Image 1 (cartoon, rainbow, N blue to C red):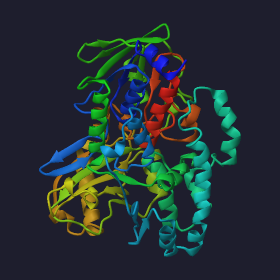
Image 2 (spheres, helix red, strand yellow; image 1 turned 180 degrees about the horizontal axis):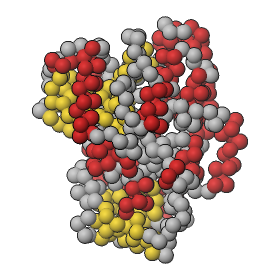
Image 3 (cartoon, rainbow, N blue to C red; image 1 turned 180 degrees about the vertical axis):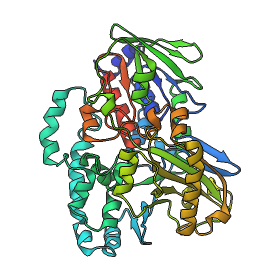
Image 4 (tube, rainbow, N blue to C red; image 1 turned 60 degrees about the vertical axis):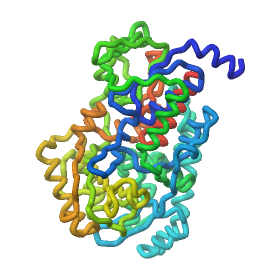
Length: 498
């Protein structure tokens, strides 16, 4: 049977995608390209999931992802319909990729140029600079298996996973990211910088499997970009692509119940009482939320390897948005401000679940690249501070304002001098907002954590093992969080429905 014949058959299939984040958008497009009649249901007033856009008195803020890596995954979505992404959206390469600001006042620019990166490293340790190629080789070896061969393959079978074990053992996936990095990089500042990647997908470098060290080579392979106009512009153009290709979009529609009968989802019910029937249902929200709050089923079999009481969730996020009435021209597009404590702070966040007095910060200054984010002569900032998720006992009604003040004070005293005099139009989000706005379990920023016991087959499956028409394209499902992860998750769902 050729592709056109399959599409004729698929025209009779109706698929509903619940959630309009990047994973949901990508899945809707891929299923539409297969010929399905597709309805995309979104609880907010616009698509993008966490990639919302906030505008306040001339300042614009991307609320979600700020980094574009593996751009080919977006290119593919347009190519499905014989279009070119670059005709609608410009991805601009960044330099440096990230600027690290350490507690001792030193800085480190992590750049596209390997030579430039090594020269930066030499200011800290000549031995580490000489060993960088070994870390890169280790990351590439993991990438060649973990991303190239496995990221878009369904891990529905335990035996399929077992066949990968020899390769994973050879790649030392039993090590954590921190342990792998420390084999090659000894300087504490550089070691922290090169261990940071799991935090981009919600993981603790000291407990996340070294499989996630592949992110290092993923950046080297395709680069780090900014979508001009922001990720909001990217969502806008993807929304237009959905509309051009005939995907129906239902906004402001929240799902209340999903009814399972005889191993199939029969229908879903919305908060407003409307119901939807379909052949296939794809959930692009947090899988624990679906199973614990939405699914009405007598099925009691586990949906992932670990029971809930042993499940580890990613950290929560406190995100501070603000403008400044001046420009800070020496601040890079992406900065990472690290406190003196690294491992201890992460232990407090992930294990002790307490809000410490100290913190580390991810700082996004889009006006370094795109002046449209702020009025002339001003800057726009987004500052992300990892904090405990809602399993911790933090009163965010009180601590939100306190943490904001401490962050502004710290930045005022270091890399953003006189910030207290120039800050304007500030507001923030806490883990409570992530739970309320995005129905994220425990307000976790990236669903379940990417530990070894919660990866591949151990993670939520892209196809429910007991409900034959229920699928997941989400951060909590295989292969994991981050834009490349959720876009690859959509590819897995596509392969399961071809």
